[in-house]
Length: 116
Length: 116
Image (cartoon, rainbow over all chains, first blue to last red; front, top):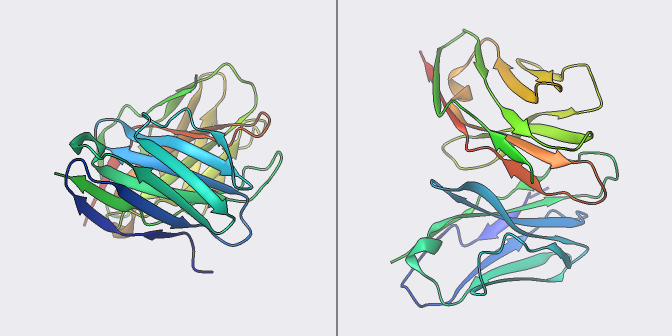
């Protein structure tokens, strides 16, 4: 099993540019999560999907952020336009369904985004 | 909303000694799950141990064990026989057991240093 795959691992961009982060979850997992990690705010959930449908996007900071999951094996997190305060490590995680069972969320290696 | 508090930003331990990391949480729910995740310098988030709130018995995984005090809303992690590879940031996390709410709420983390 290749685990959760994220690309790119590092991204440096200028303020105002569009940034697209990509994630491939573990095959067979029904849930996909996007987290953001910063020194100030720690790890926070941005949005999560179940069977490709967004379930909770209350953590998405503002309209500049959007996430899609067109199929079970691919998701994107887009920031347009990017700002310096978006600089952070963005994690994707996936999990399988488990009613009443706390199945583990498997995290990808993260994308370190720097907006200058 | 649930909150998770880790009151120790940094801890250190001598190799082969035992260390305890603290975590408290606030919730009005009676059923939930608690987790400890480890994040080494590689940035990868790794599940260390999990606890179901309805279980009175404390979870144990090899050298890692928890002290779960439901009434006090406390969930500490004990690492026995500490090894150099245990050096990492440790995050406590909460997940509701209700419905399909799979959101993880994380504490700010404790940086553990292991001294040879």
